[in-house]
Image (cartoon, rainbow over all chains, first blue to last red; front, side, top):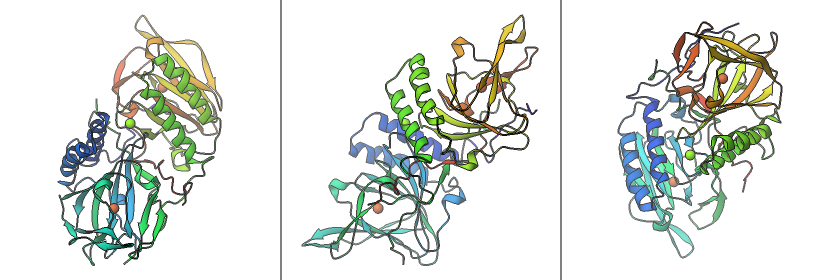
Length: 212
Length: 212
Ligand SMILES: [Fe+3]
Ligand SMILES: [Fe+3]
Ligand SMILES: [Mg+2]
């Protein structure tokens, strides 16, 4: 018989850093959405929250930062039961990039590590053409996506020799949303991205910081 | 450069069984709480949802069903960002049991596998005394806890030679709540249980079932 009272948490975060940063971000973003804000308010206020999160690179557990040798990885970090929003770690191995794709919801991108390049595309006479120069995101930078403003893009690791990581927030369960990828000559294919991970971080163990 | 479009999910559930059962339960429970029900309504309607979940024992991934050789395990399966509710898998190794404890919130217990024994305690002249005979829960059985009705109990695996597992739902982030354990002679100690796991299941990959 074992009756020992012990904390069952391991690797619990300090209140100041570690996974607690992600937990606080998730709570704040959820509270923001509870107020039924407009998309513009979400992108503004949620963008500020995301900027605070990616200002520090001391909280993402290694298993959600690991590149795959062939494919870019998309690790779900949090999704709520209403599927109102999801938070995802995108990990780009050297030289990896997405197809040209849309999102079917608002999105926020916060650069955590390395550098990524986002090339917008616009539809023109049956083809998808690059629109302006690509944006470059460096650690701490935030980008926004809105379907109403045109959100078709292709994202690449800016580096051929190192890993880059960005944290994305979407207005739904992004891995489950029916959306599209495109070829440059305009062909559309239905796309549901899924996720790279079967396990997500346990954000909710506060036992170390609240130790009685 | 890798642009292949592929599902990044592995071990995705079928819509009928597997982890989708837990996802559907979490969504239904969250929807129930969205309507701001009374505790009695939560225990009734939420209890019915939990009964549906534990009617089948085909969905809990092995890593949240693994006993620890010394301690009972409490694996968080889901908590929402509002910390309104949490879902936990309690895994009892042979002969393991909890201390006498309270919960500081409503609770629902659904027996999934094996058998557990719950002994209620009442406070009497500075001591905690067993109250009535212990309850025995067998697969499919549901028990309820309400602080207002007296929720001090001690839970044991009814078996000395096999693992028992029950699924618990609480009205808060149970691993982080400040609550109490008691000795039989009435001593109270503050208690925050934490969780046994750093990773929780990713419930949100619907890419296999929605394959375009
Ligand atoms: Fe994108
Ligand atoms: Fe209990
Ligand atoms: Mg929620």
